[in-house]
Amino acid sequence: MPTLMRQVEAARGWHLSWGGLLRPDGGSTVGRVPRVLEVEFLGTVYGAREALRIVYRQGHGVLINTGSILSRIALRYQSAYVAAKHAICGLGMSLREEAILAGAHDIHICSVMPATIDTPLFQHGANYTGRKVKAMPPVYHAERVAQTYVSPAQRPRPEMFVGNAGRLLVLQHLLAPKRTEAQLA
Image 1 (spheres, rainbow, N blue to C red):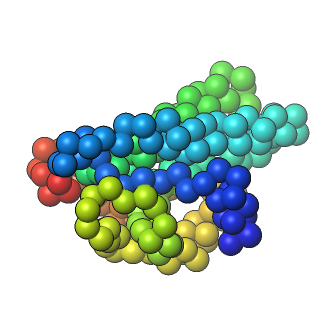
Image 2 (cartoon, rainbow, N blue to C red; image 1 turned 180 degrees about the vertical axis):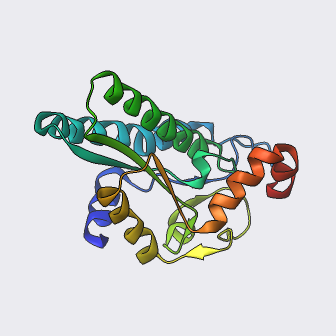
């Protein structure tokens, strides 16, 4: 994975940015939005297209997309990333419906939705907040997330959360959206 990340960094540069579209200092990060969408969402679209060519040709298989709990909720200062992750969730839903219409009952589309993962994201992502960015607890080890990717290959489900914290936060948002958004702000 580190080799792959170095190749991505060399070819494309870091794509994540912290800071709202309109910052308190009057600045804007709106120029970063296309890049975030290109890497996060379109990268998933292109990868899914190639994987599905193989899966449909062989008549069975599982496509696993990487979403996030931010596929289901939002978080301050991350609007472009949140939009991309919501789009990935919608992509998975649409692809599942297309598989149903095609009568492809042995083709499964899954979205894995981790919460905060212990990666160098917070040290390497662009930061426009003017303060140190911290991970929203609890933070899960990357190994736990990796283990979750094995499960849908063995028993496909439309969506899988990594850890209970994300699942509970999404449920809380469904039941009390205004209160949850105020807590996350």
